[in-house]
Length: 150
Image (cartoon, rainbow, N blue to C red; front, top):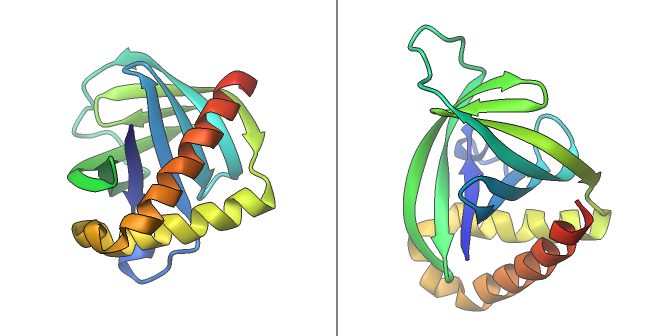
């Protein structure tokens, strides 16, 4: 299972009080756990269009997304984001939030804990194999649950 975890300006300043974790269902659908600027929510997003992002487009923000698979760091993707309310233009893809639900407080706290470990130590995750297994097990369980609910 591939997991995308965003690392933005807050994290680079040492603030790990939020997260955006995305898990693809297919190349055109994803379940995302969001505790960032918009809300504390889990959402289903679908790719509605691929379109080259113009150089003169007003960028809302940009960050790096680390990619984790089977408890290992596999890469980084730089993201440029243009906010379009229920749609997000990320690099050359336009994603739409088609459904969402609030994240329960207990789950939010667990995701904060594991995402902080992952973001702080993504280059040396082998030292945190126990935590990464717990994190992936939790995400898989919640991914399956919300996939059915959303």
